[in-house]
Amino acid sequence: MDSESTVTTCYRHPAVECHVRCTRCERFICPDCMREASVGHHCPECVKEGARSVRQARTIVGGRVSTTPVVTYVLFGLNVLAYLAEVVRPELVDRFAMVGARLVGPDGGYYAGEGPHFVFGPLRVEGVAGGEWERMLTGAFLHVSPFEGTFGIVHITMNMIALWQLGRVVELMLGRVRFAVLYLLSALGGSVLQLVFEDPWQSSVGASGAVFGVAAAYYVLHRRLGADMASVNRFMGLLLLWLVVSAGLTSWQGHLGGLLVGGALALAYAYAPRGGRRVAVQVGACVGLVVLLAVTAAVKVSELTGGGLPL
Image 1 (cartoon, rainbow, N blue to C red):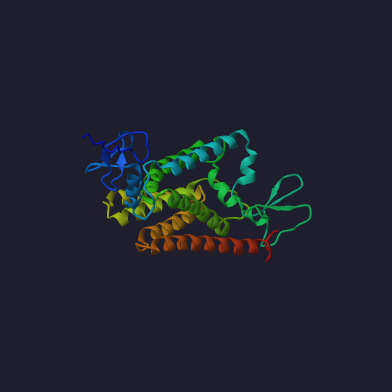
Image 2: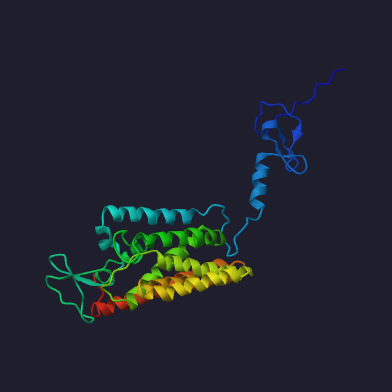
């Protein structure tokens, strides 16, 4: 007597006859659904479930591992685009450069303020003290025109070489989000120190503060990894030498501010306790630095405007 065998079909493709089971869930799968495993074959759902259970690789500070330093490339591109824009429209520098406070007359001329109080009337206050707080970041994406200043085009060239060399390394060690935060806070730190210690009517531009912050992170992270520090120490020695030598030519306040903020944040990133508290400590450090910089800037602006913040 003939017996009729049961036909088995793929659970994802009922019209396809198959005789192979997933070694995890034991459902029948067709050749299109087979995913080779160490033992037998798995179905697509079991493969996805297995991938979710695998611990994701993390950087030394807990960031997501990436193989392409996208943030560095974006920052590099923004600096170059801003430079091209200011070459075409030089007035962009006056509008977005870092300036603490300066008086602008009806004729558009600039006047240096004497003392903490300004004489109003036909004059208006321009800069951070005039409510243009965005200058504290936008100035970090501008550079000296190729036809002006002591350095000309060398200014952006040196900064971009340093960003390209250091940024790609530090970003891969930190992860994209942490690196972006470190870069921007370092730029902000440089602007705050300029606001506090530089002549308020003196304008300044350049990514140097942010780059110095990245350099500080480069040093801290290599120490955290226990790397051979000989070449790193030589690099930092040259960087600090440049900080001293360039004091009479560039804004040392911006360089030092970026170095201090970048170093402090890198220490918080690198030495935060492992486990669930790591992110909380790192976020807390970022928030603390933002508050410190904001309060410092607000106090200085209040001083410049005679006790009242500009509206």
